[in-house]
Image (cartoon, rainbow, N blue to C red):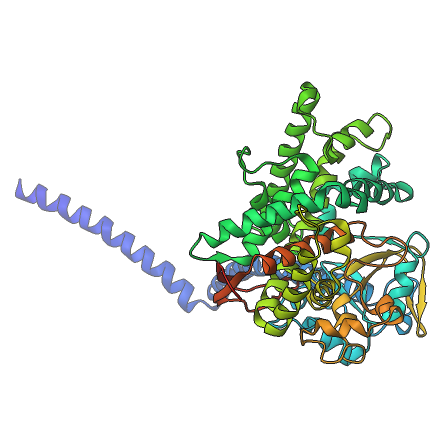
Length: 548
């Protein structure tokens, strides 16, 4: 048993030994046999070569892919550079006009131009620093770009007078893009309202019939005198008032009542605040993006339009609510003029409100400030207006048209305030055909901005232009004022509401001095242009009645 077992063990052991020996012999033949070794090495090299080939292909594909990305990047960069250069060339040199023939100046950045510099506030009554700096650098006629619009700004009184005389020939009335976009001038043009100046011709007649001299004589002077008396009484009962805001409310309520019968005590909405929101966005970049100034302005305009449309609809349904005001006339004229419709009427009324109450209330506030800071002016006003009242016959009460026309010094105060105020930054006109000036060309399609403050505060025309001096108007002739005093525009179509504006200021001054109301400054009153004239943090006063 043991012998058998040992034999099987040997046999097994011998088989394993043979297998190991065969394996060793094979490795020996490879190692020590040169031919076999070459074959093995060649196989290894072939395998490595194959691996390197596969890796090379991968690397080649990645390099090719990177090369394509590189070419794509370079191509896009080249296209972007080409577009940028094209925009800059187009921006600085309009097609068809050699750059040397344009007035001097800078177009600023593409799309926004010099808008940012234009709206930077300046704390002075003087001509805005944006314009003064460029007049010193380029002269009194220069080019720029505001909110993407190419504009030539002029402080040349002769050229301004010429341009304002060329309305309907070389130029036409124009507005800032924010106003155009807000009221949708394109729609008004499509339905014929802007053709052949029909808008301005019609609205001029409309304003004259409701705000002109005849209406002033008949009813508006007496109505306004009553409102001023009531307002001053109300102000005197308060601890303080902010003059600009309070004046705006007073002027707005009076004007809106004439336009469409607005009564603040019966209205659910404060229409004055809505229009103030509209005014704040008039000089902004016209982007309807939530959160922007223009977006708030546009939403306020939509609200104002709805209020006017609702009033118009209410009157159509109930004729007893018609008042014979401007809104009723517009509604009646829809049957006679195809360019009038329910969409245009709110635009007309809103436009008239914007054009009247804001500039008028700012100028009135400035007059109040000047009068109360200049005792000699106040004394002269008191003397003139007391004389007017003294000359009335027994039983006569309230100011008349003839008395208004006798207010010589009062009107000098009004004119001096208008000269110094220049509330709006400029008067816009769109160029209808190329205009030549001093060897330069203003291209068709551009705009021209006439700057009233630059001529009305010109020290060569008005001595000490920033000093409030109503007496200067005694010696100023028509040859001076015709070209250098343009608070209501000029040319063929001066503002049809100019006499109304002067009346509002003159009657307020008359009532204020006759009733001996005193305005004591509490705080504020600092003047700022941004670019509209304003009063920074406000102008707060205490109003009291008594001896001056």
